[in-house]
Image (cartoon, rainbow, N blue to C red; front, side, top):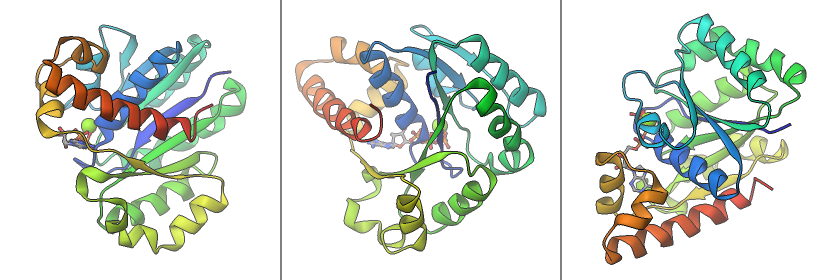
Length: 225
Ligand SMILES: Nc1ncnc2c1ncn2[C@@H]1O[C@H](COP(=O)(O)OP(=O)(O)OP(=O)(O)O)[C@@H](O)[C@H]1O
Ligand SMILES: [Mg+2]
C-alpha cells in the first residue's frame, strides 16, 4: 500500500507549504496518484496551487471529525499516495487526536512518513520532541530549509540529541534547497503548479526553477524509493 506523507513542523512560515508542493510535484513526476490533504484552512495555498491537477480534499484537523475523515479518505484512495500539508500551530490537535491516525495505520496497511520542516530556531526541535512522543509510529525525517541559511547554520539541530535520536530511528536529516525569491513569489502569487511554472516562466526564471526542482528531487530520492 502507498505511504502517507505528513509535512509538518508546527511553526509558521518555516516552509511547510513549499515542501508539500515540491513533494506533490515530485510524486506526480514519479507517476504516482496523489491525494492531497490540505489542512490549512486559513491559508490553503497548496490546495490552491495543486487542487486542479490532483485529487484533493480540505480537512479541519482541529476537530476530531477531520481526523476521522482523513482516515476514511486514506482508505477510499488505496492506490493514492497521501500528502498532508499541515497548518501552523496544529500541535494541540495532534496531541488530542493524532493517536487515531496512528491506530489506523495497521488497518490501512500504510506507513506514515513525516517531513518535519525546521528553520534555525530552537523551538522547532522542542516541538519535534513532543511530536515524536505523540506519534512514535511515524518514520520522521528532518527538513532543514536552507532558505534560512546553509546547513552549517542549523547549529542547534546539528548539535542536538534529537538529531541522533531521529537518525537512530532510521530518519534522515535532509537539506531543502532555496529557490530565488522571484521564482517562489511567481508560483505562489499566481497559484501555479511547479510543472506549469516550468512551462510558462521566461527562460531565466525557468532555469532557476529547474535547478531547484532537480535539487529537490535528489532530496526526496534519499528517502522515497
Ligand atoms: N526553500 C525556499 N526557497 C525560497 N523561498 C522559500 C523557501 N522556503 C520558504 N520560502 C519563502 O517563505 C515563505 C513561507 O513559506 P511557506 O508558505 O512554505 O511556509 P509555511 O510553513 O507553509 O507557512 P504557514 O505556517 O504560514 O503555512 C514562502 O512564501 C516563500 O516565499
Ligand atoms: Mg503553509
